[in-house]
Length: 87
Image (cartoon, rainbow, N blue to C red; front, side, top):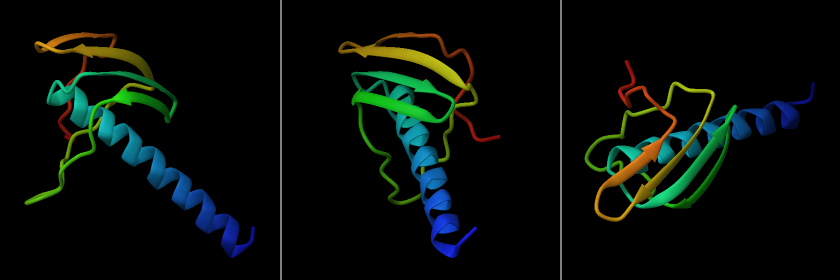
């Protein structure tokens, strides 16, 4: 495997992790949107990106697949039953 292939695979893994972290952040803060994730592949309509000031948002999703719909007025419908803590 060449160095560029290793770099590309690492970049893909980091991008997937950031996408899942953005979904966890949006669901945790009840930001309206539709979120779908399936084994690291994520689709997000709406939501937001984690604000890493003054610290990095530590949340993550521990489920391999799921769907969530967050509506205005703090209503959430989701298949995810875990928590967003990184521990």
